[in-house]
Length: 167
Image (cartoon, rainbow, N blue to C red; front, side, top):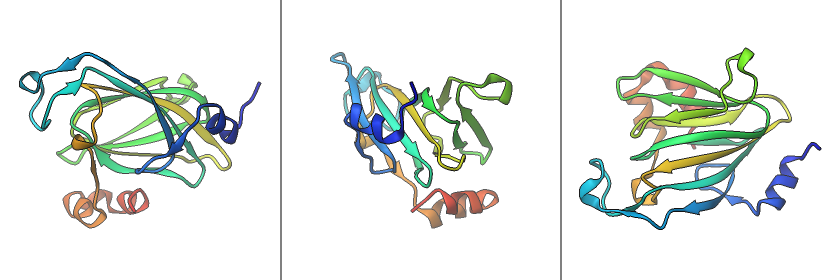
C-alpha cells in the first residue's frame, strides 16, 4: 500500500505548521520537569517529552529555527528528507532522513539543542512523513524562527542555503 501526502494529511488529521509543512502533536508527557532541573534558556517548567507527526511535500520547507532542547527526527514514509543543521561555530551538517542506509540515510537523526535547523524534500513530486520527539518537551516559549538577514550575517558562508530556507 502506497499512501500519498494528501492521504496521510487526512488520515493523521494534520494541520499547517508555523515553520512550514503539516503536523499534529501525538504525545505530551504528563510528567513535569521543574525549571530548576532544566538547561539554561528554558523559561519555565516543561513536560518531560513531546512528539509530533510532521509532513513536508515538494515545494514546502521547514524554515530555519532553533529550540532549547534536543529534537529526535524519525522517518516513517515517503522519500528522503534533507535536514540542514548549523552549529553555533558555523559548521554545517547535512542529514539525510530516510530508509536507505546505502545512500547515507538514517531512520533517526538528532538535532542538538540550540542549533539552527531547516528541512525539505528535494526529490520532485515527493513527500516525507516524519516524526519529531523533543525532550524536555517542546514549548513555543523555546522556539525561535530565524530572521534571514540576521542568520546570513552570522553565517555568511551559508548565505545561499539560508536564503532558500527562510521566509
